[in-house]
Length: 152
Image (cartoon, rainbow, N blue to C red; front, side, top):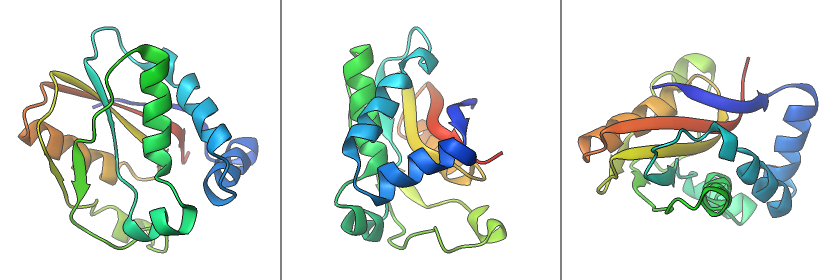
Protein backbone atom coordinates (compact mmCIF):
# COMPACT_ATOMS: atom_id res chain seq x y z
CA UNK A 1 0.00 0.00 0.00
CA UNK A 2 1.42 3.34 -0.99
CA UNK A 3 0.96 6.36 1.24
CA UNK A 4 0.85 9.92 -0.07
CA UNK A 5 1.06 12.96 2.21
CA UNK A 6 0.59 16.69 1.69
CA UNK A 7 3.68 17.67 3.68
CA UNK A 8 6.26 16.51 6.20
CA UNK A 9 5.61 16.76 9.91
CA UNK A 10 8.22 19.41 10.61
CA UNK A 11 8.47 23.19 10.48
CA UNK A 12 5.37 24.89 9.14
CA UNK A 13 3.66 21.57 8.38
CA UNK A 14 3.99 20.46 11.99
CA UNK A 15 2.76 23.83 13.26
CA UNK A 16 -0.34 23.68 11.04
CA UNK A 17 -1.17 20.12 12.11
CA UNK A 18 -0.70 20.88 15.81
CA UNK A 19 -2.89 23.98 15.52
CA UNK A 20 -5.57 21.98 13.69
CA UNK A 21 -5.56 19.15 16.22
CA UNK A 22 -4.89 20.86 19.54
CA UNK A 23 -6.50 24.25 19.05
CA UNK A 24 -9.74 22.80 17.73
CA UNK A 25 -9.22 24.33 14.27
CA UNK A 26 -11.79 22.33 12.32
CA UNK A 27 -11.41 24.90 9.52
CA UNK A 28 -7.76 23.94 9.05
CA UNK A 29 -8.64 20.23 9.00
CA UNK A 30 -11.35 20.85 6.38
CA UNK A 31 -8.89 22.78 4.22
CA UNK A 32 -6.29 20.02 4.55
CA UNK A 33 -8.92 17.40 3.68
CA UNK A 34 -9.90 19.27 0.52
CA UNK A 35 -6.23 19.53 -0.44
CA UNK A 36 -5.89 15.74 -0.25
CA UNK A 37 -8.17 15.40 -3.30
CA UNK A 38 -5.37 15.43 -5.93
CA UNK A 39 -3.78 12.47 -4.11
CA UNK A 40 -6.84 10.25 -4.66
CA UNK A 41 -6.38 7.86 -7.58
CA UNK A 42 -8.94 7.70 -10.36
CA UNK A 43 -11.09 4.63 -9.81
CA UNK A 44 -11.25 4.77 -6.01
CA UNK A 45 -14.75 3.87 -4.79
CA UNK A 46 -15.01 5.18 -1.23
CA UNK A 47 -13.26 7.00 1.61
CA UNK A 48 -12.82 5.92 5.22
CA UNK A 49 -10.54 6.99 8.05
CA UNK A 50 -8.37 5.67 10.87
CA UNK A 51 -10.47 6.39 13.96
CA UNK A 52 -8.96 8.46 16.76
CA UNK A 53 -8.64 6.97 20.22
CA UNK A 54 -11.47 7.62 22.64
CA UNK A 55 -9.17 9.86 24.70
CA UNK A 56 -8.11 11.82 21.64
CA UNK A 57 -11.71 12.45 20.60
CA UNK A 58 -12.58 13.54 24.12
CA UNK A 59 -9.59 15.90 24.35
CA UNK A 60 -10.17 17.51 20.96
CA UNK A 61 -13.94 17.29 20.70
CA UNK A 62 -13.60 15.68 17.26
CA UNK A 63 -11.94 12.90 15.33
CA UNK A 64 -9.42 14.74 13.17
CA UNK A 65 -9.09 11.96 10.59
CA UNK A 66 -12.86 11.82 10.20
CA UNK A 67 -12.97 15.58 9.52
CA UNK A 68 -10.21 15.15 6.91
CA UNK A 69 -12.04 12.20 5.32
CA UNK A 70 -15.40 13.98 5.13
CA UNK A 71 -13.79 17.05 3.54
CA UNK A 72 -11.97 14.78 1.08
CA UNK A 73 -15.22 13.01 0.23
CA UNK A 74 -16.96 16.33 -0.39
CA UNK A 75 -14.09 17.46 -2.64
CA UNK A 76 -14.00 14.24 -4.69
CA UNK A 77 -17.65 13.21 -4.66
CA UNK A 78 -16.72 9.82 -3.19
CA UNK A 79 -18.93 8.35 -0.47
CA UNK A 80 -17.44 8.48 3.04
CA UNK A 81 -18.16 5.51 5.27
CA UNK A 82 -17.06 4.61 8.76
CA UNK A 83 -15.48 1.22 8.17
CA UNK A 84 -12.99 0.87 11.02
CA UNK A 85 -13.24 0.42 14.79
CA UNK A 86 -10.29 0.54 17.15
CA UNK A 87 -10.07 -2.48 19.42
CA UNK A 88 -7.43 -0.67 21.47
CA UNK A 89 -8.82 2.20 23.54
CA UNK A 90 -5.70 4.08 24.65
CA UNK A 91 -3.93 6.87 22.83
CA UNK A 92 -0.59 6.02 21.22
CA UNK A 93 0.89 9.51 21.32
CA UNK A 94 2.97 8.83 24.44
CA UNK A 95 4.48 5.60 23.06
CA UNK A 96 8.04 5.45 21.78
CA UNK A 97 8.79 4.47 18.18
CA UNK A 98 9.45 0.82 18.99
CA UNK A 99 6.09 0.47 20.73
CA UNK A 100 4.31 2.23 17.84
CA UNK A 101 5.62 -0.32 15.36
CA UNK A 102 3.09 -2.84 16.68
CA UNK A 103 0.18 -0.93 15.14
CA UNK A 104 -3.34 -0.69 16.49
CA UNK A 105 -5.74 -3.61 16.58
CA UNK A 106 -8.73 -2.77 14.37
CA UNK A 107 -11.82 -4.37 12.95
CA UNK A 108 -13.52 -3.37 9.70
CA UNK A 109 -17.15 -3.74 8.71
CA UNK A 110 -17.59 -4.19 4.99
CA UNK A 111 -15.42 -2.40 2.49
CA UNK A 112 -15.67 -1.06 -1.02
CA UNK A 113 -13.67 -2.28 -3.98
CA UNK A 114 -11.02 0.48 -3.72
CA UNK A 115 -10.87 2.26 -0.39
CA UNK A 116 -9.04 5.51 0.24
CA UNK A 117 -7.84 5.39 3.85
CA UNK A 118 -7.31 8.76 5.54
CA UNK A 119 -5.22 9.60 8.60
CA UNK A 120 -3.81 12.84 9.92
CA UNK A 121 -0.15 11.91 10.53
CA UNK A 122 1.87 8.90 9.38
CA UNK A 123 4.59 8.20 11.91
CA UNK A 124 5.79 4.61 11.46
CA UNK A 125 3.05 3.41 9.11
CA UNK A 126 2.06 0.62 11.51
CA UNK A 127 -1.43 2.00 12.18
CA UNK A 128 -2.11 2.36 8.46
CA UNK A 129 -0.90 -1.21 7.87
CA UNK A 130 -3.24 -2.47 10.61
CA UNK A 131 -6.14 -0.55 9.07
CA UNK A 132 -5.31 -1.86 5.60
CA UNK A 133 -5.23 -5.43 6.89
CA UNK A 134 -8.63 -5.02 8.56
CA UNK A 135 -10.12 -3.49 5.39
CA UNK A 136 -8.74 -6.27 3.19
CA UNK A 137 -10.11 -8.88 5.60
CA UNK A 138 -13.49 -7.17 5.26
CA UNK A 139 -13.39 -7.40 1.46
CA UNK A 140 -11.54 -4.37 0.12
CA UNK A 141 -9.84 -5.18 -3.17
CA UNK A 142 -7.44 -2.21 -3.00
CA UNK A 143 -6.47 0.25 -0.30
CA UNK A 144 -4.69 3.55 -0.89
CA UNK A 145 -3.68 5.71 2.06
CA UNK A 146 -3.44 9.50 2.17
CA UNK A 147 -2.36 11.59 5.13
CA UNK A 148 -2.10 15.28 5.81
CA UNK A 149 1.52 14.85 6.87
CA UNK A 150 4.21 12.27 7.49
CA UNK A 151 7.16 12.09 9.82
CA UNK A 152 10.30 12.20 7.65
